[in-house]
Length: 523
Image (cartoon, rainbow, N blue to C red; front, side, top):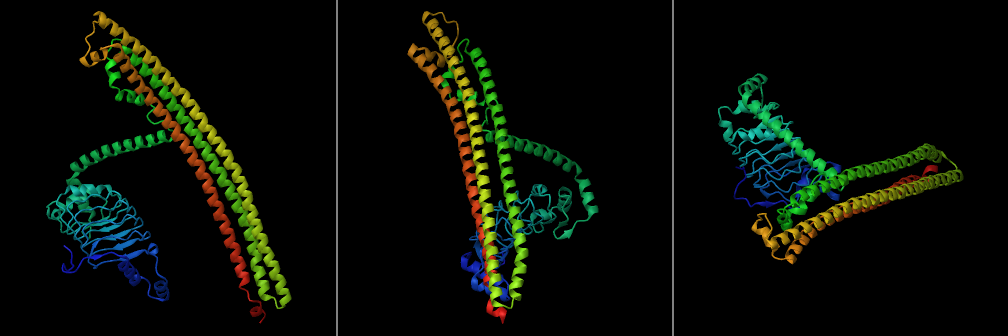
């Protein structure tokens, strides 16, 4: 379905093709010639035209990270791929190729105009990431199901759609269906939609639209609920207490406990288990609620720290700007005075004074930066002590609560063992009235087998409790360490950047002075 001669050899998108295209499409004036001599960085290219190149596969575009417009029409491309890094792309033309499926567009979140005209596409999908899509050209493809139109309702900014030349365009109700189900559309198949016809279409399909809107509302509500649950889970994870707001930990203790589930059939164990679960869940809820409160305390501490840091940096920067402003005011007068000076000795004296002013400014700015470093170091150290204390207190109290879970488990284990031994003794005397399942009776072969079964169940429960405690402690300690390390790294980078800025500014001022040629000025 492309216009290229099939006898031509398929071409590869290599560096030579890309360099040639960039060079040919760049500016042709003096700036363009200079760019050709020095080379153009692919990362700076905004528009790229690669039509009629007999390209079989999209490749090697990863360096074009600033690209906004890409033209790949009239090739023999079979798949949409290799566009992952083109996140700034706004306009994409893949018309007149051999593409069979829409794919590979998930990272193009800024795309507004997409042309897939004259390909082999049979289904409209995989466009969900294109939330800014305004123009979609899919004419001359193989789209035959009118339900593809329903999919396009999610694109609230879609204003122009082309589907002519597809099997669905031959349907009697083609235009009326699209006008009704895509009410915000302005152009269909390059023709502006008449508002009166749009209203008639809406009336004709009112029942179907109402049904669809109802389903969409239900789906949206479900989506929002799922999103809220995901957000809630992330908040619980940030507090390191996810899964502790109910019976999850307790249930996990019995999920793989074959022996424990068998012992639950013994008379009295069921009631004992229910009481155990209730008390265990209460402790878990206490850990959960305490964890959320502690997370809020850590957040407040971090927010306060960040505010203090930003306030100190801004105050220091403002003081530096004030000094620079005074210097530059004097700087202009100094340069003018040097240029206007006719006496060499007086000029050299002025230059010496100006050099002194530059050195004085440098010393002031560096002193200001050193003061800021000391202030931030003290702030960071104080924050580190506070956050480490908060984490330490959190861990200590959680471990105390988890110890209560172990105590409950130990008490439950003793009671179950007592019931099991009593049952074994009754069974040996023939006094057991209960009708136990065969799997449970197999535990009562002898005392050692029974004690081992009860012990195995107990070990599984303790292991689950220990693992959850270890996970919490490890994660919160790791979080604390990473946070503090990152804060120190950020401060080092900030200081290096600031020192570099000061040096560059002072060097620029010095170079302006050095470029003054005393002999030329006096002449």
